[in-house]
Length: 256
Image (cartoon, rainbow, N blue to C red; front, side, top):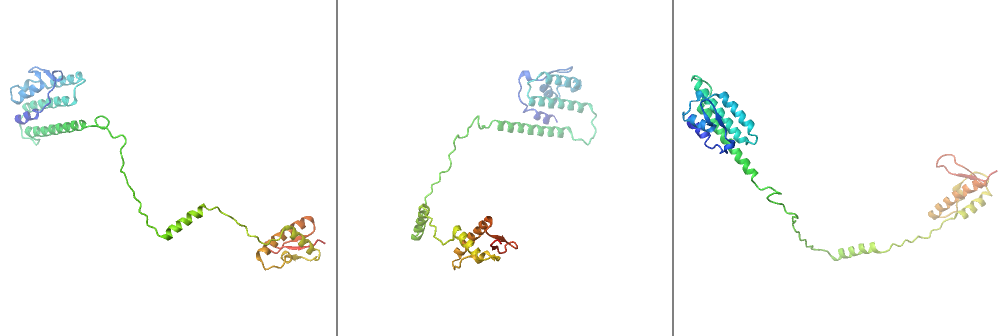
């Protein structure tokens, strides 16, 4: 157990005198790490060391040292706990117990301290790396990838003429020519309908007053003009109109 205990604190960090825990006990006066080293070599009788005074002085030391590093306080806590364990091993009767032996506990504690030291070193290496914005800086205007394009046209004579025709059609001014179509004016329809109503006093369909023609466009124009003329004659009181049902023939006659 002594050999293992010694290896545990060989790598303990060096501290300044202001950060060193100095004890003033009945059987010892000096640094805590030296007390542990002497106890390991059995040069100090731990039976005369008061664990209560050790704890009180450790707490007072932690309270006064406001700027103390956390790892140093942890190391002192482990040292004090190890002294308390060594004294308990001396005071308690040595009987066979199911608990691990002190040598095994010391080995476990040594492995834990090694892992703690490895984590500290890893954290220090991470924090010591270059930081963007402090040690290294990003480029202000990163350059993109330059792409060079070369067009290879493949066209036949028909494609060239077709493209030229489409462009020419878009640029040519549009000319609208209204075709001359035969129509019946409203005045002609009004005169024709008024003249024909003078010879008929019976109800007759409006289509019967239309002129005979094979031109469908002219017949449509004559029907529309005759319809407007019939409405005008009915307004003037020169004709009467009636319709039996929706979309039925419009009947016209001279008023009685």
